[in-house]
Amino acid sequence: MKFSIASFSIFSMTFTRKTVLKQKCCTPIFIRYHQVKTPRLWPSVGKIAAGKQFTRLCLVLALLLTPPLKGEVPAFIRGCMDCHGENGISQQNDVPTIAGLSAAYHKASLYAYRNRQRPAVPSKYRLGDQDRPSTDMKTISDRLTDREITYISLYFAAQRFIPAKQNFNPLLVEQGEKIHRTYCQRCHKDRGSRAGDDSGLLAGQWSGYLNNTMKFYRNGSREMEKKMAVMLAKISEQEWQALLAYYASQR
Ligand code: HEC
Ligand code: HEC
Image 1 (tube, rainbow, N blue to C red):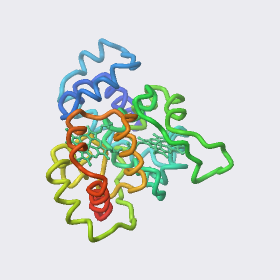
Image 2: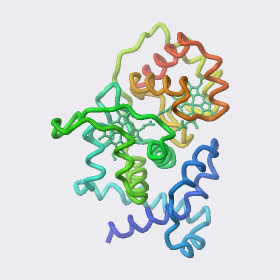
Image 3: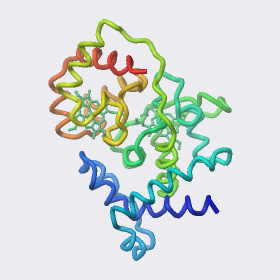
Image 4: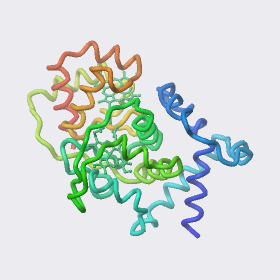
């Protein structure tokens, strides 16, 4: 019973995604991702369900009802944890923690991999059967259905983000904080820890992953907001290292 209510609310989210996305800042990039290859199921239900209130209700219901699903986590979600760690909390410097990412950001990221708007790094499996051949996020997202992507994004949004315990240079933290406040805070609020910004999570995210993804932004292989590009152009490599220390210092 609980399962079917959860499924209903999760599927309702797929009809109302545009309403959700329009409420957020930084929408153009997301709307663009979502317009590609996302079929509209049951359009008439979608129309009825289009209200903002209804969307919020669905989100709350879905989040409330996710915990009882523990123990019977579907295989397409369990597989993610073989690299991203138990409940999406990574223990590896080059693999991001995905627990607590907003559903909109998570979903957009998977579509970005699938639509080849974002590069992926080949990776070994870190847990379970480690003899499986390496794979990458493009291959993984290719195999997911739209429904699975919606389900995954809600599932991990309901898990708690736990900051990584990692080394950093304490002498750079103060400088990093200033740079963050000047150039990044506008879209990465609360020191880069607010999932609701739909801009990923920077505070407590693994430095190895952030550093790799920054290289992709810098060489143009990962798309980004124009305004973020303007800000990034203003910071030097040394300043980026200071930002990394600042994000890593938040535990
Ligand atoms: C074989 C290891 C592996 C598996 C399995 C895997 N991932 Fe990943 N994932 C990675 C690595 C490594 C990165 C970072 C490098 C990159 O972007 O390719 C990543 C990046 C991501 C990101 C980007 C995070 C961000 O902050 O932007 C998301 C989202 C993600 N994975 C979701 C998933 C989901 C959902 C699944 C399961 C369906 C999954 N991953 C399975 C290795 C894996
Ligand atoms: C105009 C808004 C805006 C500004 C300003 C901005 N960002 Fe972003 N940032 C975004 C959005 C939106 C995303 C997620 C979109 C994407 O790339 O998929 C993002 C994503 C990121 C990511 C990837 C997160 C992940 O989990 O993969 C990093 C790293 C990042 N920003 C760093 C910065 C830094 C450092 C600054 C300041 C120098 C900055 N951003 C300024 C909007 C902004």
